[in-house]
View 1 (cartoon, rainbow, N blue to C red):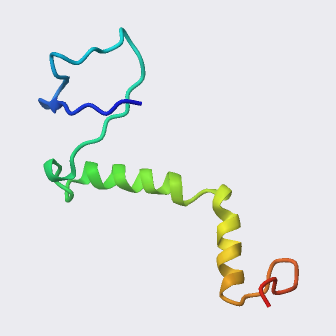
View 2 (cartoon, rainbow, N blue to C red; view 1 turned 60 degrees about the vertical axis):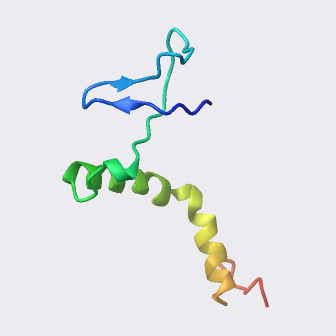
Length: 83
């Protein structure tokens, strides 16, 4: 992955002229937070959806279990594994 500083004119991403880019491929686009109105409904919706993808998933349930055990809660197996 390569990071390139570019400009966005409201419709297109403008890459530096001297950037040697491939013919085609996938890209990841990040917008500088200073340039984005964080009270914009579109921004808030996008941020909420992105957070939900990484926060609300069953793959992370193990961490919730471990956090509960760390706080002294019994494990789902009926015993406190940390005592």
